[in-house]
Image 1 (cartoon, rainbow, N blue to C red):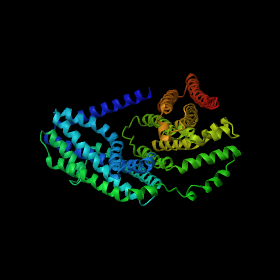
Image 2: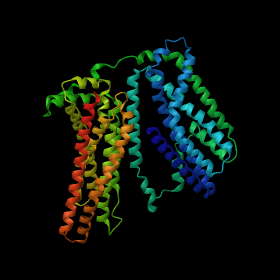
Image 3: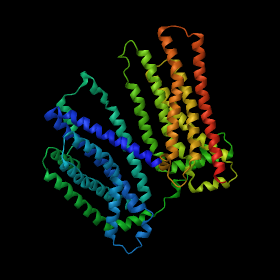
Image 4: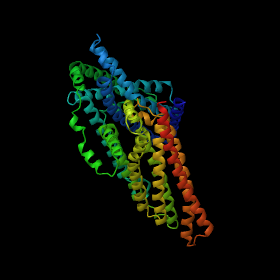
Length: 533
């Protein structure tokens, strides 16, 4: 069932990419020479984007396949030639690093070919172009991995790469938002077309494989063959594999032996954390459980480093409200501002659900095989689960309250709506965190990492229920708030029936939130108790 659901979602995404590429290419055809130039430029940028992704993915994947894979201990003691082992591992690295790019690239190229009425020759050229295009950055990533592992221990190198990747992604998100692309929609701020296209073409260089791939496919779209760039792709791919193989034969065993080094314990003790937690007015059991959860979280770079990307998205989110120009609607400014306040509330609810499924839902599963220690210790499963709840509630509540209050402050909404939104976030936080903890206890996966747990059947079920819950709360709050705002705009007092209906909606929203919260936690405790029976 879960596989079928993901397959349907994948087909929908591929169909959307195909239709979008087909529509855009069809629109460009009506601009003749300018359309050809824009299509050519689009192919360059498309392959340039995938080139950067493949390079980084190749580094991370090569680290796992060449140095951290569990079966290497058996393979390296077997009578296998090192060259044969390299070829097998390299093919595996290419497949694992590039399958997502191929899935996204295929419908785009099919849509472009369909819009240009391309023949089978174009599709064959696309396949023969994609193969060396994927091999080149993965080979470069393998060489970078070999260098890193011979400089740092493999597990430390993986943490460094993950942190650098998230910092790069966060910086890119902030940069793309702060250049304010919405200014292009204003006639008075449109740049000179020549300067605009020059800036688009500036990152393109004829020395990159992305340029060779774009030129090869564009020539095939026009019925020709660009043998020069096609040959450049294949010869560079073969040369990159040969160089990577030679480097592997020279330095692989040295790097693999360094990969077995354990991290130094002094960096993971986090003694200052224990001192800070002891200052909190908590019972001894709750305090020790909190220290354990925080240490597990902070020791895993793949977990806490994602907070950097989340912080970047929060900054971009708030900046969007900061630059939102609502004064251009002169007679409906007050109504539109308060309407955006509910958009802000809904978005905060969806952000809350996303953070909960990634960090809160896997809380029980994060115990891993050591969960038996919790079951056999003198700690009740109720205390254990409620400790997980309070640990997840505080950061989720703080994050979404900052989003809601700051966004409404930038919008300048009515004070009544500000207070109502802030209180709604409190109730929604209790409900969604409780729902995540409860479902996480009902559908644990102690043998998987947090990312896999978040994408499991239980994680998908949580997201569906969370979205429905947020929509229900918004519906219960939007109607009474709109009545209040419209009455304020018209300067009419609220009637007694209106006040009663508004109070009924607010009480209903609170009751639904409390019910979801308590029912989910009771269900989770019951599931943990029945687990060992």
